[in-house]
Length: 418
Image (tube, rainbow, N blue to C red; front, side, top):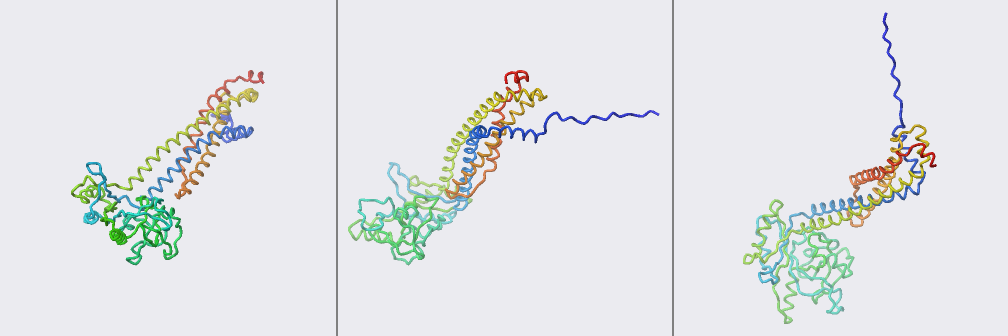
């Protein structure tokens, strides 16, 4: 009877250490010279920190901008006087706010009117000293149209009519040294256009109308009273003309409304009217900041290159110092690929350590800056992952030449030179 004899296959021989053992060996080699390893990783860490910080700050700013636009809306339009054909400063007709309010696609409209005079905290300040603040009369619906909020106190319509009251912008209150109002929003007065006005409110910064931050707002009736008093004193009672008309358009008809505003505000001279969209200012500011971010990213790339050169330098020195080790390992059976993988792995471990440290520092710096600007916390996971990946790649490129040089050393030459 013929029996089939099957020769058992030999178990696969492990030709080298497993990846876990290799990784442990790479880490052990870098820990053998901790100061040198730390210094060589610093360049990579600085570059990655700059990269992650810039991306994190940009992300936080973008999220804040989106939140602002979501809360304030992108359907706000501003109508202001332009220039005449001869280049002179034009004016808006006094009927412009009422005419604009008749447009069917306009949800609300509110105007501000320039008032002649200066703003002081007391009447003891010489008239020659200006405060840099302007006076404007405001329509009752201005706060609602702008979606602005009061930081303290109350709005002009919430006070008894006929009383001289004023609401200050955020910067105006700061310049006048008025920071706190009592719960009723009264008890403080300022000297405005030669008269005392009670401060009843302070606005939060108005993002879509920053010019109001340095303005003292009074009611239309108070502005007419000031004009009448100026006429009684021998001055000319100028008619109040709108300086800016803020318009909330229906979301689906913003551009169509924008096209109608100039000819509606001033049918006789539509070219003398300027129509803008305040939300575009925020978007333009974000676009301007992108160029600064590109510059910062360029600096981060320079840091990465410098870090890569530092790691390459350290690894070349390590090859020269460890020739005896290379010779012993080659004599014990290590192949050239084993030697090359050892030095290449050490370079990548150094770069990965620097990348991880830089990613943590960059994320921390981005969040500290975001908190300082009043933005929300943000963790740029994608930037951190990309940064660490880039650092490992830089480490591989930087360690390629030293690893190749180490692999070419013969055992006899290494042992003889040591």
